[in-house]
Length: 163
Image (cartoon, rainbow, N blue to C red; front, side, top):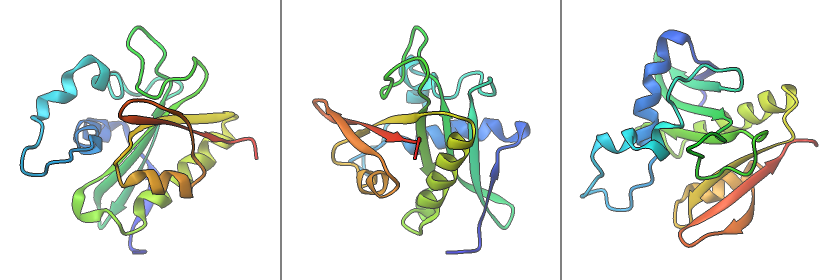
């Protein structure tokens, strides 16, 4: 699929991160989805609350004027840490696409572009946590993430950027 563009999110579009945060939640049972209010829990809202700080970065994929996916990073080392937190210098990765745009290469392209942005900004590595049975584990490995720790239900993955 080549009819999409990747660009930085605009300030006026940051509200869309609520949608993408909800879409980023791996839900095994499509017939019993979590309520949307789940994104208000401290361990989830930390990914988007007051987005736009110095270390916050976000790229979006746009098709015919519609944003269909987003990848964003931020350093989550405050009182509530992200699931993939490893230290106070490493951004955590979040990505999601609306369902009908998945498995078309857009997510991989978004991730690769964000990794380039992070390299240019001088970050040494980026981290994420992912459910072990999430199909995205394979995509993360393809773009350079490695499993560094296996938790009960998740993998902690890191991508080194100093290549």
